[in-house]
Length: 493
Ligand code: FAD
Image (cartoon, rainbow, N blue to C red; front, side, top):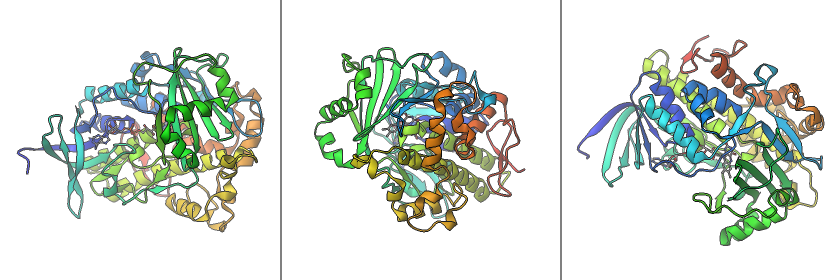
């Protein structure tokens, strides 16, 4: 038993984007929040390419948008892809809706050490008790609910704190997520491995797309090329798990070899040296990153960000899902602490919306992989929708409650493709019409089902920019809850 047990309204575990968002959004409503982070910031993290909903939606709601804008991050107008049937790269720009065209149809490419530190400092500024160097070891609680956490402080001392709610935002390495819904389910379809590092420069795409992420499919998988600064480029290869042994034996050689086998990316790095400044002087490896859980909350505890779920990085959705999930959790917590609505109803709303958003991206990504054809490549042949394991699809459809696709109950095994909200051929068709996409009208968003994938992001952005969505929001389910005007709690219709 420790000498002193502190009391809070909410304890947040982890100070990444998910943790900072949840903590700030709760503290903004005047509650007492403790955030425990095991590392000392700034710390390295992968996930550098953001979406506009994070920058203009979540950051605006958290009151940190201007500071992020002042940090001088590279402006990202969209993505450039060498992907699909077209042998030439195509652009995809963020005109999410004509209403949100400039000045908010852009995001940033961020050095995560700096971006995450800005968000964490902002949490501190609005009153969150942020403690770095504090590693959470486990949760306190009983059958009925989770009631706090135990952690080790910077000097190795053991401490405890209690709260009405514990938020697990401790990322993919979470050691406490199993307290909610048991083990993770890992996706077979996205069972990839990434090896990534940095170059001290590199060519840029022609303006105005010089800040775009460039994703290039090649024989063994695909590569990302992210311009972080004029003298810093993040380059990563995503390949099949069959490469794991070679990558783990010698990551640097494997990484250079993969880059060399993709002419589009190799050409951009001609004569450019690998970065030597820390933390960019290392080549790192991550595997098995697409997973979800059968449950995202239990009384007293919620999971957000990578602690909860993650899906393949090709659309840069990680930080969006993490901050969006955290905002949803904060709404349920704020309403729970205010005692206005039943806890079950509040947290079921959080879970349903989070799953829905995750489900849309998951399905979209399956189709996006399906769209790239390369009959000679083992990697691409294995990533056809017809090769999605029926059990995985069924488990997934059950998980998202059939929300993502309207017609799930009609599809039997082997018909997985018919279940998808967006099909590869629909994507292919839209991409084929992209050459004129630099204008306001983006052919990708003329497809209702593609628009649906980005709908929540747009609403979030509108809420940040205009203080609420332009059109009346509809509940996700009949009788479901809606976000309050400031986006920080739930209200009934
Ligand atoms: P994290 O950022 O991981 O933060 C969790 C924090 O919790 C860490 O600071 C950690 O130190 C702390 N912590 C862990 N355990 C404890 C503990 N026991 N006690 C206290 N603190 C603890 N996303 C994008 O948006 N764009 C991209 O381009 C992109 N590319 C990616 C490429 C790859 C290869 C991968 C694997 C992911 C990529 N992502 C990308 C995803 C992105 O990295 C994550 O989704 C995002 O970092 C999740 O944020 P988070 O706050 O949930 O977790």
